[in-house]
Image (cartoon, rainbow, N blue to C red):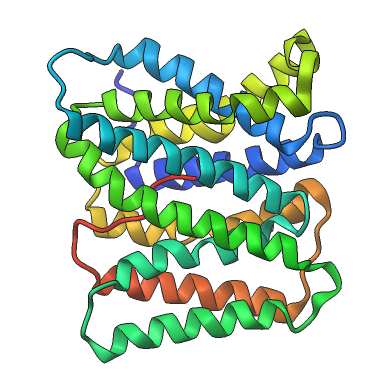
Length: 285
């Protein structure tokens, strides 16, 4: 008897849940493992597994191929490091909501339609509303989230170029290695010999599987039968999923106004994705 096929929509939703609950679990362990060390271990885990699976071919590559994948890896490392720094300072849902401005601007970038400007305004109002109750919102946390959003925008733009130049998972595997190497000095300086402890390595590996390996795999399977536009709309649920994960795992309660702000950004992202060119879609965090 053949097992029933799981809908690609559910695969994407499970991937989103895995990313955000993995982030919430990681944040809950920041007292034991700092955010820099945690994100380093997460990237190292995904780099090792992706390299093992993809076994990327390095010969015959042009200088431009390497420049693109190096930039892709740098944006990946910066995106993950800065959002974890933001998680350490402000609630998870607020950090991801602010970060999502990056993909939103990419989605509407270059558009001359007035309605697309309305999505940016709606998202801006949502982010502004987050600061109306600044009790648990700090300026460094907001700035790190904005930096993560800018890195995410660069990641989106460079991922398309990487996909055209590197087949399969080759580009992502190499980019993960680049991001890991980029964070190695900072992680060694902050974490030191703690990074070699079996318990710390196990936690980092678990977070890497939850936040990278599982969602990447589920999304790859889903995209075989799911339209990119639908995928982009589903990914717009990230801020709401992050807020829910923060509530359930960390007890981070958002005010009604902050939930409204999250809803504004989600609605703006859905609207922008529906009207954007089909090749533009937010990638996983």
